[in-house]
Image 1 (cartoon, rainbow, N blue to C red):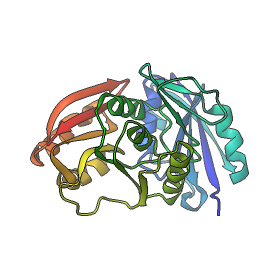
Image 2 (tube, rainbow, N blue to C red):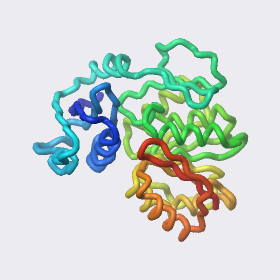
Image 3 (tube, one colour):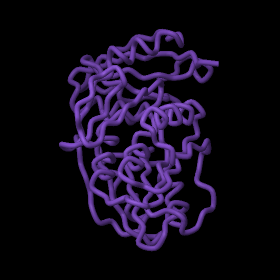
Length: 277
């Protein structure tokens, strides 16, 4: 049965840097998807998780340096496709990768990834997804085993598969995201992606060559230990979904799990870290 969502449409003045700050605060609530708009940001929460005064805990709404207005409406399942088609535009990663929908023209890039995002996070538009896609492009993944943790649309795992990964496990707690990953993997003819519904990584030892986890600071802090155990010696861990101010805490936690920070990417107020075991 298709989900019914509540849409929060935020108008933010000025957008920079407040859009990213609002996005981060909203991720502490059970929103499942975000879309950047000309005015600011749209956020979507399943109607069964919504309640009165849902966002009153968001401190940014009271900040004197930013004007945030918002409206709320219900989005019926049949309206979602038309909505994302109007708002989802192709995005280029480096010079040889494009993320697009199936109704967009083929751009002739080395890596053409077709994504139908439904209500899942991960189209490449958000800075964290963009940086993680850059990392995937930069790595040699031929015959490697890869984990896409918090897979959303499955876009990271799909690119890893297209780059020659042997096996890609794509894990998300949300069954909607798992379903979306399966659909997108099929659209991209990626037969080696295993989509799994789970909220955390099971006790796996020395299994993966690469782990990509684009989630949020708190979940990453809780799960870094399991990521380290799941990595092979000399395996690589890539983390994103947090701010520059969070680097110190994440680095300290990773170092306690025998993971060494070797590279940092920054985009706007977000960052993505590369560790080696």
